[in-house]
View 1 (cartoon, helix red, strand yellow):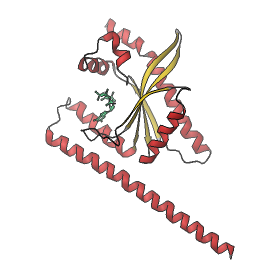
View 2 (cartoon, rainbow, N blue to C red; view 1 turned 90 degrees about the horizontal axis):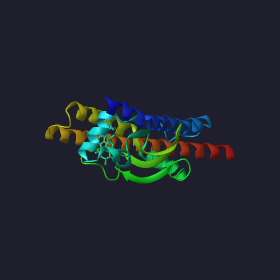
View 3 (tube, rainbow, N blue to C red; view 1 turned 135 degrees about the vertical axis):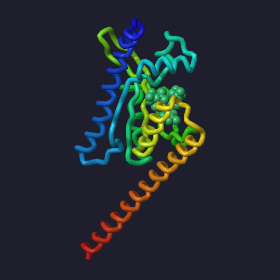
View 4 (cartoon, rainbow, N blue to C red; view 1 turned 30 degrees about the vertical axis):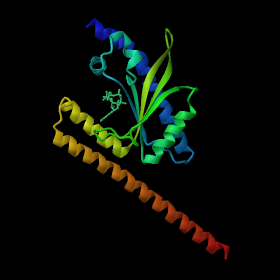
Length: 215
Ligand code: 0O2
């Protein structure tokens, strides 16, 4: 009971960090939309890992309790959803531009170019983020996960199935989940091609109508 109370206290700055980071990424989206510019960010969510998941992960990786904050980098998690795969890399660039300003990039993991065995695709950026608390500044780790809507659709359902079946998903279902991940990826490619085709057609149309007015 005392342990839970202590963990609730430890997690306060993580909650603050998640709230601040959500506001920051939502503001980028809102500013761009207000300027009638395209936003690579579709929507943003965030969560602080559940105490039970933190302790379970520490046990899985043999991390002593006093080293958890040092070793577990995704206690604070932000998820940024994009329409298209190339938007993910635009968001990563936006994050890189803030490196050394309001956050510090520790490392990046590209699970899009190197998908996980499960079929999981997303881009992860691990950052250090300073939180101003009543007791002074505390620098914490946070994980930014950037993915398309289709990658998020797959990951959300796969995660809840894994949770429901306590990670004991039968092999044949794992194979089907991998196939479903490929289907989501193909959907992303197809939507990008459709977008590019529309842009090309629009440009051609504009050029033609400019030529007509020139005569
Ligand atoms: P939750 O509920 O989001 O906290 P590990 O966490 O052991 O898998 P590592 O190296 O610490 O491994 O981190 P990694 O690989 O960057 O993964 C951290 C988070 O990425 C996971 O957190 C998930 O949110 C997401 N993720 C990674 N692999 C998969 C996957 O195969 N399927 C889905 N749906 N999500 C994945 P948690 O702790 O699993 O979950």
